[in-house]
Image (cartoon, rainbow, N blue to C red; front, side, top):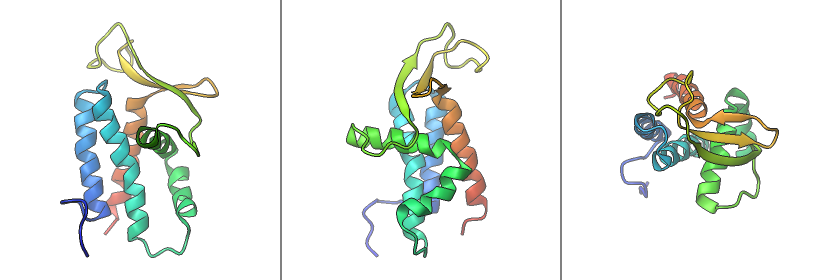
Length: 149
């Protein structure tokens, strides 16, 4: 089989790529370019898993248990697709807005402080820190790939 992705040829390799993007993002948690790489690669893992599977399910049905196991993947879906297409045709996480929220403390401080952060505001008024969302996705993928071939 030909490769169109240079050195990434499997879902496990895509997961390793995500881990590198995640570490880059954690080094500079308010760098939107690094965040974009992290959420895009976090989301793309799911498509790679689907292509490697032997399932007869359609893509949407294949994704459902992943969304149930990690609702933060819905956020990654919307962020990645908005970055790629600008406008979301089928949003999944009901994101109203994203922004860099300035705080009194730099990003190196813990979340207990009013630190500068990337915020995600949802249509129901909830506000979440992007760093928390990407951490949840990383934990989910770490657990998933423990038993993946």
